[in-house]
Length: 126
Image 1: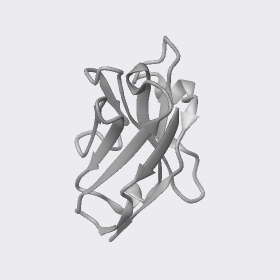
Image 2: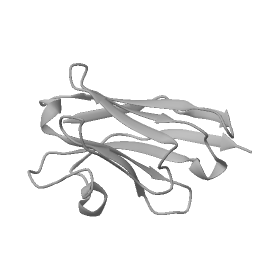
Image 3: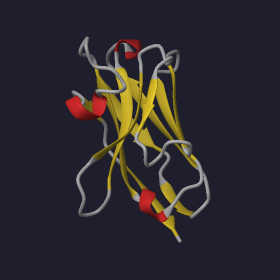
Image 4: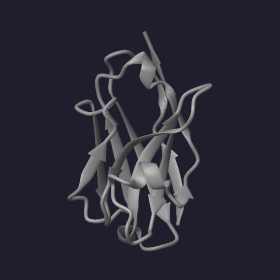
């Protein structure tokens, strides 16, 4: 599956931003999908994951209550609504997908997804 993320930008602290990731090539609903991010000089980290049907969701503690992941299987798209943005949210954000049978939103970060999209830069100024 091919993934393309977009929607990043420069915003002030406290603002909102919505990222989108469009998938193509395979049946989108067969994949767990999620978002990761990598800040400059730091390792890539898990942000959020969502199950194939969208009924199971898991967030990193750092974004819980501020970020919302969702998916529209009819549009082959996964979203990340980011509210109350903080300067520490500044990073390149990547969407990812995993089609292995035992991967869940809770294990996506630990297992590492099998497909990656290109990143989109999010910069939050203080």
